[in-house]
Length: 262
Ligand SMILES: [Zn+2]
Image 1 (cartoon, protein in one colour):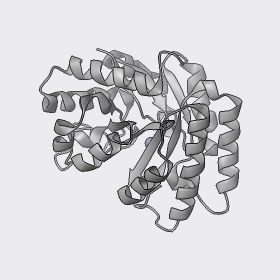
Image 2 (cartoon, helix red, strand yellow; image 1 turned 90 degrees about the horizontal axis):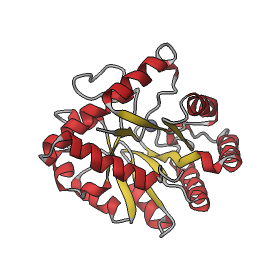
Image 3 (cartoon, protein in one colour; image 1 turned 180 degrees about the vertical axis):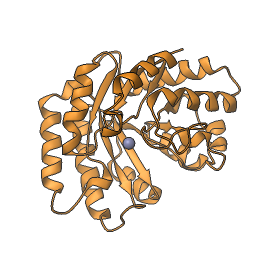
Image 4 (spheres, protein in one colour; image 1 turned 90 degrees about the vertical axis):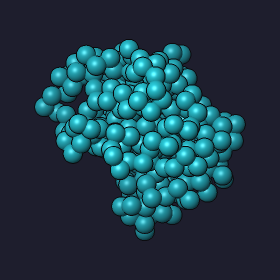
């Protein structure tokens, strides 16, 4: 069984004490590829250092997270991230994470939209998928996607927690996927109808580590090895062996992020 964690922040300081052990636990669990979403200019060296230390396993993304936009720093943040992407476009598998988050701060919506549009343009220019974070902002995200979507755009809505109708609208944008994480294992997560109903060729797995640990680790630090627990939950809903979920979702991730050719 081979699993890919398509969204993990294992580079964050929470893992400074045991990162190599966390990587070893991934390999024991069959997780052989980790995709690392960038957050802001400051996190770039951390993402790059994991790419350098575990080159066969760790693939980076470059982007500015919607919770890290501010009026006085938007240009410097986007400038640093764009410069990094332009310097080494072939080393990155996606532009991310980008998106809209109205849970933490509604006042920055205009800045989030501006950052989103500019980063989508990079993704199209470099032929990379976008990795999208959305929290309490589906109407705003759909408005943005209606505006920017075309045949050149592909991507994933990560940590997807929406309804089956939201999921179907996302996959109808074209080459779009849903990132399913630990919330799937929560009793109140609400994802069962979505996972039972949505196209299986559009589902990828993730942890969003260190956040949102799956049951039985809920509330603790999340780590990429736990993506196996998400796979098991999806297997229960799809009524197939977990190995089949691994096969399907790994192939989906390889296709979206073009992991075999990059
Ligand atoms: Zn994230």
